[in-house]
Length: 256
Image (cartoon, rainbow, N blue to C red; front, side, top):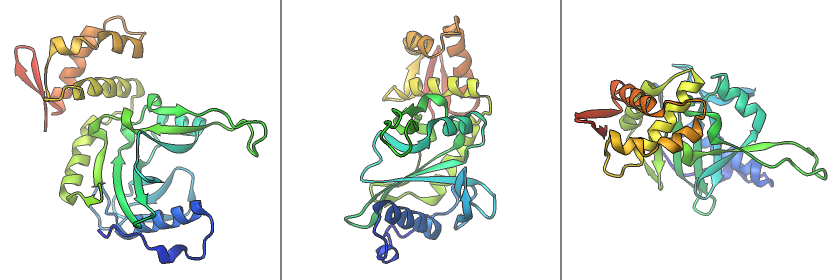
């Protein structure tokens, strides 16, 4: 994988956004393997497809690219809020690729993949409507808040300008598949419990520790009046999926 961006491609462009699009999309098509099946390259859709930018010619998985100069940070801008909410609630999302790059060094600095089944409405931040003076007055955009996605759903491909091992990427994507569910309500609970599980630095925790999140989980799911049984149910589900290990006597350990 060559992390350099080809600046010769954009010598005739004046718009910064056009330069960024050509540089990053060309880089993906030239360098990125399919994180799902490992095929050497993914391809750009010939025409602008509303829901995706790239696809794998072998497994047919689809990807959408979001890129930004500098660090990825907490969140990345997306398009129309209502459009993205409709997509993630209908399970028609492609997998997302989030890239950061440096125009100073002309290199890719970070690239992560987030599988579509880690998207819930809570991670989509609605932006303020455009003012009446704007060309698209009233239009409402959104941000994807990356930091709200559990670490199991952030598959690192490039970090700090260093490429991750391909086999490790494929393994992590495969492991993440165990958390896939089309039921949006179930997905929301799973994501929230994962955030709680990930909050323990050592990776080990007890059922009593998890009960400390009772109020937080009730605020997220006020329709549920039996939070503690739900916590136990979700921990059992994560154990069955191999995400955590049961150590006995009410203690658990996050799987490596």
